[in-house]
Image (cartoon, rainbow, N blue to C red; front, side):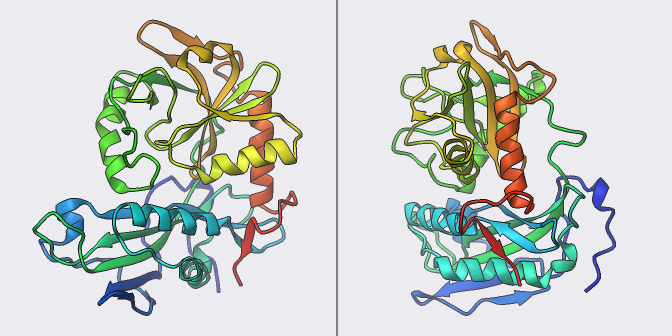
Length: 341
């Protein structure tokens, strides 16, 4: 199959309709057989649960072409498990892990001509999601749901390299204790849009959200976990029950400890500690690591020693190691790479 007619080196990070996507429906207490379809549109009743009470969860992962020409995905089993956890929290039927993995395989295999070639620094972004599809007017879970998975080719998150960004400490709360901050639900991201727009309007790249109970501990941004590096090279990630368990962050921390021999700490991080760190980054599927150069608070501005020109040395090593595993230039832990036949 020939590659799609795309200028791979100039792809942006935006949606583009491609050939096939996967659809499965939950009805009468069970999931029906999934199918591949060319139809990118969804038809819903005006009273569908997703439109009334926002019963929706989603995931995000990528397919890559490795140096030796294989097409692979990175740790999709963890996306499947996290989606199950998210669905249970919103009283939605979990889409089985094995079927999730099969859906990923089928969509990538059916769209191999849309997977960017090695060396383009682009990838096929995959978006699995599930929503309440049957009508519901009283406040209760819907009875029917739809699982879908589509792909779209995307370029690198940072054109021309990752330059450190500037954050502001948000006046808003991202998530409440015992709330839904630990799951990947659309409602969490909707709540972050207003603070995000405000941050941009004020000249900042993103928000740093603090814990809503005491506003003294670092949580995350609207869509990424934090990763800090101490001046002695220790990797520190914030611990909280309302932080989404990022697959990228968990992978980077594992590599730091088991492949790079670094000390790792997973613990609550006070905002007052930031001035003592040497490097800071945001972890996520889109960019792997976004370096942070500066955090502007209400009473002080923290400028990390790594500066505003490039990633810090430890952050760069972590980034290069994870990207090397994804692209097949570095041998990673067993089971992290799933090849698409």
